[in-house]
Length: 181
Image (cartoon, rainbow, N blue to C red; front, side):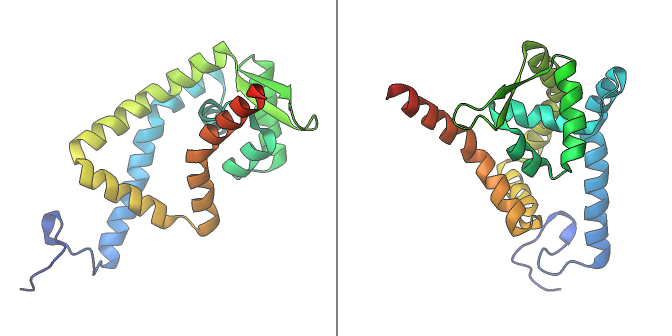
């Protein structure tokens, strides 16, 4: 028996994965995604919305003032599809679309109080599920999981993901600098 420097539970090696081990990982992702989306899907179904509505609400919450163009890039959907989703969210009083401060051609998106409440309701169960899984798995597993997810992204997608971490902070700093001058 070989002495594996990187053992994982069950004696499987991270360096030499079989097709079956990879298949099991893919299946685990499918089932985890089903569990992750199950609670919000029930709420969305009640109000006649789909996952695209939830994703839009999530990213607008994450970055208030996000432009339609930036949301389009983050979601990776067609302009027509996003316009349908945004039209519904705006008409239902969940999202406010405002003219851009620097560029009047841009539309900046903000959640209304009603939108904040719905987004919170949709995301609470997901945050609880992820929090519990992270606690159960431990910090090393969490770091490894994040590495795996990032390694699955292509270069452009990874750059978008990493930019999301910085975007709200950078825009907030720019707003503060603009209002100070």
